[in-house]
Image 1 (cartoon, rainbow, N blue to C red):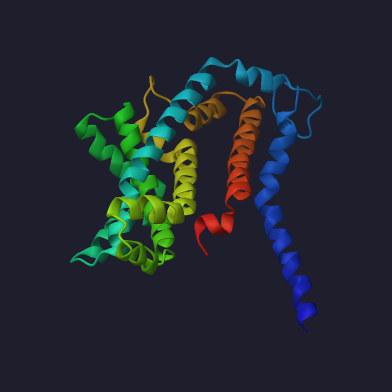
Image 2: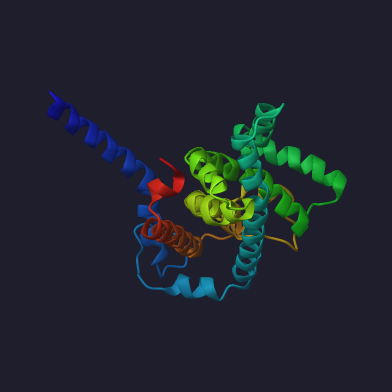
Length: 263
C-alpha cells in the first residue's frame, strides 16, 4: 500500500518541479540565441547577447548600484535584526510580542501595497530617487527575514552552555565571542545571504523609489523588456540565476542548508 502511494506522490512532486522550472527551461535556450528578436526555439545559436550584455552601459551601472545597495542593506539589516532577535528570544519584557509582530509586519503585506505606502511616506521626506531612500525601503523588506531566521537560530542555542561558561569565570564578552557567535554563525550566514539576494532582486518596491539617475538592475531589466524584444534579458536572467545557485551551493558546501536555516 505504501509503495502504491509513493509512485503517485513522486509523480506529483516531479510535476511541481517541472512547473517551477519551466520558465528556466525556456529562458536558458533563449539566452544562447543569435536572433535579433525573441523566437523559440532560436533559429541560430551563439553567445551574441552575452557579449552585448557585458558591454551594455546601462546594465553595468545598474549592476554596480544593485551590488552596493545589497551589501549596505545586508550589513545594516544584520546590525539591526540580530540584536532585535536576541532580545526578543532571550529577554522577558513587556511588549515583546508586540515588537515581534511590528518588526515582522512587512512580511504580511503584498509588495504592491507596501511599495505604495513607502512611496507616500518618502514623497514627504524627499527620499525618492536617493540611495538613502532605496536602502531604507530594502531594509523594511529584508530585516523581518533576518529577525525570523535569527529567532530560529537563537532558539537552537542551549542557554546552559553559556551559563556554564559564565560559571567557569568567562566574561560576558568572552561568552559571546567563544560560545554564542560560533553557535549562531549558520543562521547569521543564512540571514546575510537571504538579505543580499532579496535586496539585489527586489523590483516592485524599487520601481516606486528609483529615479532616472538611480536605477537598480531589476528595474533596468524591467524597463528594457518594455522597450526591446531581443534575448538580452534572457542572458541576464541566466547569469543572475547562476549567481544565485552559486551562493546556495557555497552555503551548502560550507555549512549545509539544513544546518544554516535551522532544524
